[in-house]
Length: 233
Image (cartoon, rainbow, N blue to C red; front, side):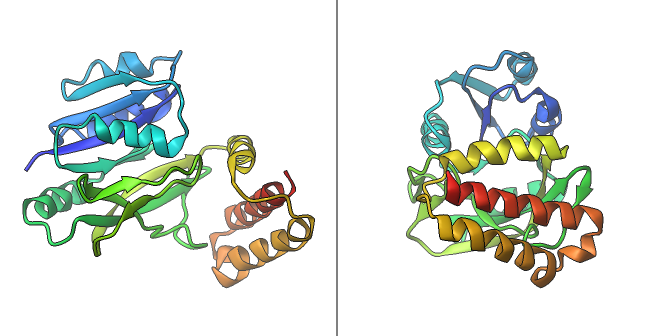
């Protein structure tokens, strides 16, 4: 069976070459670009299985659903422009859609922060629905932290893909500042005071962030700061 992969791009040249190389097994890759000015489209045009669509930014959920609607295959995999397929996941996905048991599958991702894979702190396996039959699943309409809605029973794949989340602290701060502005949480001064402490304690102690060394402390601290922004804006 054939597979479509949907990727959003906007000035995504950093990893895009490696990302697209990793999905050459798919017969169709849909790129939805929202106005890149770097070499993203030049890179994408070097791959035969890539189809490029231009769409002004609609928000994460609507932008991804736009891409899904452009696919010609029944089975779709959602991949970000900083996420890379592993060979083991490739083999498992192709075997799964050949004889599917479920209409949608959650897939694990291994997150890299500041050049290091993080296997604790709730950042692995970090399951989300990524593979689905498009007649049975679709995106909600959240502008950020979007998710796929599927009323059927959901399966889990064994293998993971790689996610190069943040290269630097500055990049983390800039992205989370944007996400906190888009988050639908209402301004709540009490939660803005209390919840950041709980976020740090949960990530660093309960979810064993201290075992990640220096990066664990930094990540817990930064997510605590994000929690503050989320409730104070």
